[in-house]
Structure formats: C-alpha cells, structure tokens
Amino acid sequence: ETEFKLTDQIITHDQKNYFAYSHRQWTINTFKFENLGLLEIEMQYTTSLLDIDVRNNSAWNQRFFVMKQLGKYDFILVKSEFNFTIDKIKKVTSNESAWNYLRGLLTTFGTKKLYQCMDDFIEYCEHELLENKNCNAQIVAFLIEVKIELILDDVINDSIVNCRKLYELCMVMASRFDKIRMNYWKFIYKQFQYNKMMKRKAKKDDKKGGVT
Image (cartoon, rainbow, N blue to C red):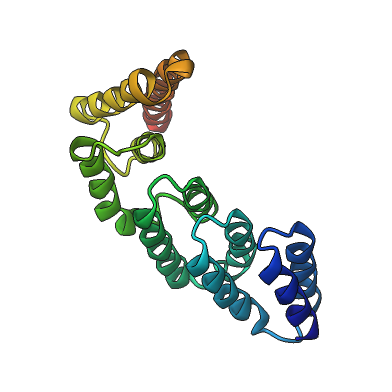
C-alpha cells in the first residue's frame, strides 16, 4: 500500500514516468500471492488514469501487464475488457495506444474466441470507412488484420466476396492511408492468398491421408 501511494504521487506529477510504473509492476509481482486484490486495484487505477487521458500509453501498457495475469483465469473479464477498449477507441479513433492494446488482447486471448464480441465493432469500423471522412489508418489496418485471421481460422468463409473485400481494404491502405508502403500492403494480400492456398492444400492432404 505504501509503495502504491508513493508511485501514485510520482505518476500524478508525471503520468508517463517509466520507473514508477516499473516499480508498481515489481510490487504486484512480489506481493500478489499475499494480497490477491493487488491486480484488481491496479486495474481500477489504470481506469482512472485513462479517464484523465485516454492517450496515456504508459497506462495502457500497465493495464496490459495486469490483464495478462487476470485474463488467464476469467474469460468473462477478457470480454468485458474488450468492450472497455472499444468504448475508448470510439471516443478517439486515432488513439494508437488503445488500438495496440486491442491487438494485444486479440493476440493473447485469441481473435477466434473473441469473435462473438467483435461483430458489432467490425460493422462499426466498416461504417466509419464508408461514411466518415475522418476514417483513419488504424481502423482499416484493424479490419485487414482481423479479416485475414478470421478467414484463415475458418471463422468466416473464404468466399470470393470476402476475399474481394479484403483486397479492397489493402488497396485503400496502399492508395489512401499508407502510400509510402504501397508495396507492403500489396504483399500482405499476396501473402494471405499464399497462406490460404497452403491451408487448402494441407486439408486435401489430410483427407488423402485419412483414406484407407
């Protein structure tokens, strides 16, 4: 408690003080088995910091440090955290820190598992792309990343329509939001096509191997 109060005073004056956050992490790792509520306290603490400044990257990093530990045991909490992050993103859609946190959740706990929570947000992102002149690269990049993973994981089918939509998203990035890396986004789609082809081949090989 004393350590938390001390670092809280430091962070109040410097909300991005790396050493203060590192010390809080050390405190949690050292004493969490003696005080199981430390992780929940830290989640509440980062919420208060993000309410003050939703772009506070240090607070997002600290929150992820806690979430990786809490989420192991409570997937309902992971879903709640996904919705918390979406709400923050909608307030400032260009907030790269929140987008990175969202990617961290998907990578750590599984895009496939979180798909049911994601449907409405995917629709929101697609609507922003079509209707909102202030749509940004973060929204489009998220759609590309998620759609690639969902198609390759067989969560959504690899129909011509879905693949065409993915191609169009890559071209939007290449021609509108990230012209400098135009060839990169073309490569991303080519790599997706290759991975899709290899996955189909592997399925065929498995079927052949299963025939007796």
